[in-house]
Image (tube, rainbow, N blue to C red; front, side, top):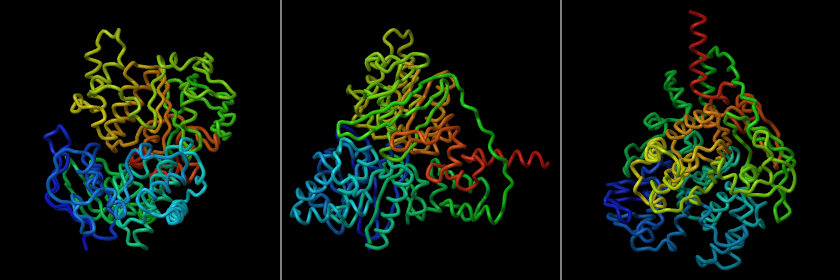
Length: 539
């Protein structure tokens, strides 16, 4: 029985005559786990917002057709009334926070929807337990990492015990273990309680093994819809295991590491261990026994020591709350360390003002919208360029093209999708050609295709002699671009080295390909190159 039904839906955002959504007919049955994929700006988030009534009630614009949720027409019911039916998680959970502490945030949300204080308390504890974040109960929200805030926002959506969960990239800021735990919980809720789950996701390798249905969107339309194994090969850029399965003609195509291993056991392959690419050792950024303590008394970093080579891409890994963002903010000068030193080459910059560091450091925070100050995309970039540049106009066009922003150059930055805002923030960070680039979770909202473009950009910058440092939970991206990996836990460095060495040594942080084959093989290209080399030797 259909619990979601869209009929003749056509929607245009305010000031636009181009439809952001055109869906003649689409239904979702009760208990389905539906994943919506597609490039940034394809209409995925817009579709989700029709399910809880944000479109058309809050966004304005022109809306035609009907959306029915559990038989109710969203045009006639306000989002507050729909919240009992539809739990919603936006792509930017930071903007959903109202009060100061975690438990109070959940209780306030519930009481504002009419729950009694006693019922709100019960639902709060239940949601925190289901998501495994009861330890965050009394924490101040501003002290949480991005991933922890994302789980708190999801707890708010879950606390009403909705019939439908509409989640916009719910794992985008989660570390691998947290993401797998969340997806396991969501899968159990669909199977045990009949919850209907509709989520958007770019990191499809995480969800294809869990979902019952895969939808691909483009230009505001649903272009493919069906069983994940048959639809996945039609993706603009399929996940690694699908790519490998297509290259090796595996049938059925593997959706999970377990299924890929079954193919390998059935038809063993001779593969050579990957040759390790040595990272440059010339000093770039050095951190010596850096300690950061927050006002609450907790430690963000503890005697943290690491080396980020010049002319290389260094990736900082670690679970949510490990200290990754704190480290980047300290290097940028936004946090004053209690102890320790920060070096740029041979210069001690520990006490250099943040304003001076701006000249030689490009920085993209976890919330890229905080960088956006003007009313047009091209103006954001123009104000970031060096005013003395002789080829300012040419540089502006180069940036618009490189970061795929030419089509939205005249738009207001806040009218962009999260992925488009992320690309704009990246373009702003590199616009003045800084020798150091600091990126905090730079793949948030980015589709798989542009992530590969980003990896190429970062490699090119490193080869030009830049020092690139990024934090990320995206091991697939790191395998494509990083020369050096640092693993943090509780604000301390617990492992560092070339990516294949670190990935081979941990179960949590690794690529799908590495989990199947090991031997330092991280990407589809590594496997195919190894097979080709072995074939040449035996020819």
